[in-house]
Image 1 (cartoon, rainbow, N blue to C red):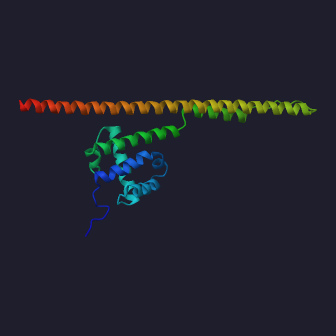
Image 2: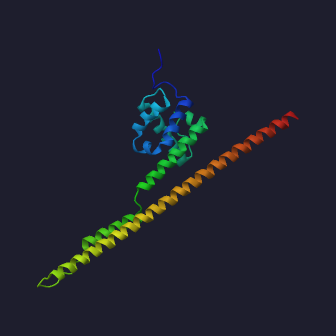
Image 3: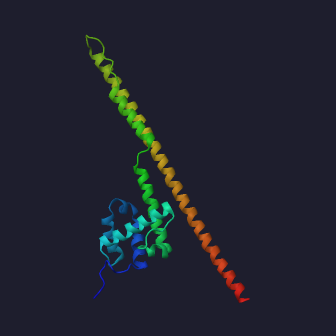
Length: 206
């Protein structure tokens, strides 16, 4: 009797195919994880259900998040995560991307203060109403004054958004640079280890 999908062990090739697709289509994964899991199954031809794929990937990301936070491998259910470097690197990159997306969606303190100031200013602004008798000129003057205040508030809000977008771009650039440096360091370490192994073998053969 064939083993059920829940009991069937995940192969490295399966999870790598899935992770590569999700990493390339990370925005879809972040916004609609179940839907993109179904697409990943069709594209990669992996014989798994969408719930199984989602649970596996979500669990690995959670384990990696805990590891990045505590430095401890807290789960025995994700052996493939620690045994396969390609799997580990992809999951780690997805963790970084997830954190970056969450930061982008969280309004900064300065922005919230600016919005509150604009709201308070608009709600508490006093209208200088002239004494009777009224005139068309007086009404137009009041109108122009209020329009001016609204435009000033719009300009302030626009500047706040520009600041946030600039900071977000700086964070993304920094993240990309850090990721590149990390990859370079990993490659250097692997090269050094390889050379060390060659040196040891050479010494033993002499």
